Amino acid sequence: MSRFLIATMPATGHVMPMLPLVGELSARGHEVHWYTGAAYRDRIVAVDAVHHPIRSAADYGEMTIPDAFPELAGLTGVAMVRKAFQRVFIDNAPGMLRDCQAVLDEHPADVIVSEPMFNAARWLHESGGPPWAMVGISMLGFYSRDTAPFGPGMLPMRGPLGQLRNLLMNAVHRRVIFGSVTEHYEQARAQVGLPRLGLDFIDALMSPYLYMQSTVPGFEYRRRETPSQVHFIGPLLPAASADAQQPTWWSRLADGRPAVLVTQGTLATDHRQLLVPTVEALAHEDVLVIATTGSSPEETLSALGGLTPANAQVERFLPYDQLLPHVDALVTNGGYGTVQQALAHGVPIVVAGATEEKPEVAARIAWAGVGVRLRAHSPTQARIRAAVRSVLGESRYKHRARAISQEMARYRAPCAGAELLERLAQTGRPVTT
View 1 (cartoon, rainbow, N blue to C red):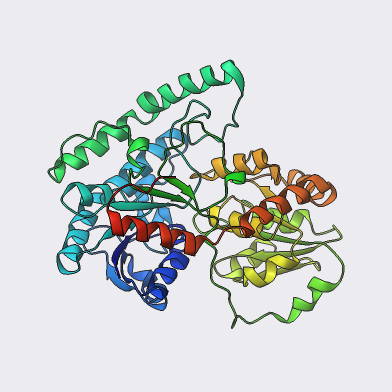
View 2: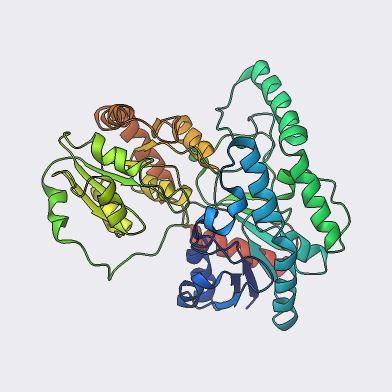
């Protein structure tokens, strides 16, 4: 049996996708240690892993970004992206390196398993540690002649003109938009005694040993130069919620009306941006609207004037594995995990995300034909209503969502990921296709 060190940034979207994979590794008899924020200890222990807390860096688990990093408040666009990468992901890497080195000193591992934003994984390996594997928890973002750079959510363009566009945009992205981020990254490496890497920051996020992308090829752009160590393993979906309590209104899901689920996400948590406008936009439609808040429903109820429409239900949490088989459309800001869950059940999507990596998720939704993309951070009620009507009324969206669902059903992500990690642990060499 092997020993694995899992290392993730302390954020829900970075931790949750790893749980099924870690559970599978534990079930196979491997010893698993997991370094991340204290807020996730109980979830980690539940999959039979040993939790190691963050001691030498910022532990912002289950905090909002403005609360954790007030210096980011008010920033938008490129300035926000640069500062967030520098402050959140790079500045914390030296301390996380020290913490992980202490863990490895006591529990030497055969493989480090991280997600792309955990920069210290590469540094651990370069400092004498084991090889490292990555789990792609969002869209693939490496530079390619076949795609525009990661960030703005631009669809692929075919032919020589498309390649020229991509070449120029990638050059600007590397040198102008992310040039200062790359230099900040190199300075952080120097701080911990590592030489200059000589790679652009985006390129440095790819492990040369193993990169497991947690979706299916049908939901990702085709690239001729995809590295051989990239493996699609299918979606890493949450475990079934067998003991979850169903609310008293659950029987309304069988009343014959389409059910529309709307969720705001875990980072962009202002319910006035999407959740409340959707509930209000659909108040007079012949649908059942189900809104999950992730936080106290009272905030949403207050924004609705204290009363929910007769066709709406607002809950903090619902078991998606039980709910999604009854859902006809999802309205979301583009959280990668939620989108993967919806597509696994063949649910078409209306997406309105405009922050973090969400424009890229939205672009894949449009490219794959599984839903409607609203290019707005806070879309109007009229646009939301029109998009929901399209998704419910035009069979092409449901057809494409079902096709992706069928593709996903052919994968068993936790098993596939565990087998790839076992190969890496046994050989210590890149696991290629």
